[in-house]
Image (tube, rainbow, N blue to C red; front, side):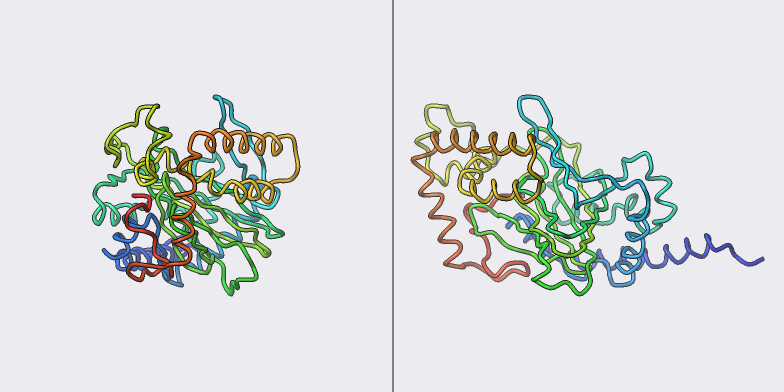
Length: 344
């Protein structure tokens, strides 16, 4: 009896996936883990191998043609209320969707990625402090035409336990003029732009790495896996919460050690770019206006409280742009400062 087509597809998927899994274990080296821990992000080219990546491109095309993709939306949480700003050009689907079991029949490789924990285990081996034990996958299609994302963090360590974001790009023949770069901000070090090229994986700290996606001028494909931990959070690197009376007088180096103050200072330093990224990512609407008003209100408060230290922080950012220092890394010509870069 001849094997069924579905069985042959399944066997072919398993062979390609198993090869990709072994390849992934080889490319996530101690040096990669060290960069992730120290700098907060790292780029790994040829992450899955071309056979697996080619198969994922085909499956992405199939998923895109289903009616189950939904528009991506920026979630704005303020005072216990959530507002959603949809993006007309960006469509996605995650494995929590009720339609995923149906879509998975068209996407065997993505189905394997959804259930396989090879990357999580490999990261745990090199970075045991992460204590990763769960993952969530989302596929994403950007139609181009300027589709992009505003500045944001993927997680808040005080609200959830997402630890590492892994983005894999599936775009062949990508050129700088196509846009769509991932821009990461290892604050207070200089921003770094990363091209979304075929079979490139970017790993970064979900709670600590500020990032955005620049406007894309051609269709752009990627998928994201978030790795989380159910373990209690580790103690903060800071020596304890500052009393309110001491915050305004604290040094930049002291404030930057605390993830909460670091996020506030980044919003103030990049206030104009942050606002522009909101405008670029969303059509004019009441919700966008509200988001911009909230942004500038927050910036005003942060600026008043930290007005004494902001010039020092601004100087740190400027010096990291003009004075590269430290060892060479695979992901940046200007490695982040070793004293103030966000910890993983």
